[in-house]
Amino acid sequence: MKTVLIQRFTKEEQQINTRLLSTFETMFSANSFNKLKGILHPEGTYFGKMNREKACGHFYNIFFGKDGCSEKFNMEVNKGISMDHIPGEVVLELRCSDFNPFTDDAERLNKEFGEAPDLSINELIYRFAFSFKEEKISSIRIPRKCVSVINNIVQNN
Image (cartoon, rainbow, N blue to C red; front, side, top):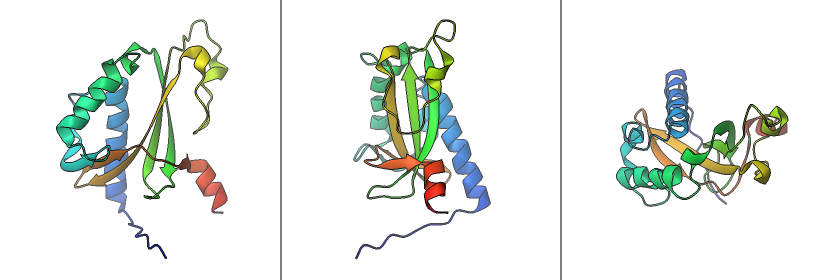
């Protein structure tokens, strides 16, 4: 039998964590890998075994590597919950694409969490699961299984 500890956050911790996620979204959309260091916990682990500095370098590659996010014109964000070996973590789905608001159909952007990428607009999808500690992001990982927040609420009611 597997035991899972469910941690309850206070209202203040929820507000801080929400603000950290919002800040992460902003930095991701601005391709600001060097400012990420300010919201990452110095003793955290990122993408398995990376420390904070290596994680910032990894984000540099995501932003400025071949066909990186900095080359994309549009970013959409969806939220979900991890359902893998670490269930309940907040998951951000960042959808970066070459969508042109002047010529492309806006219906292309109405994607649900977990939908496949739209290759006609060269869409890249990144999903990151987060944990928090001491008012910082203490881990970022790529979840193996996750669901939409709305789907989770519907299934549990």
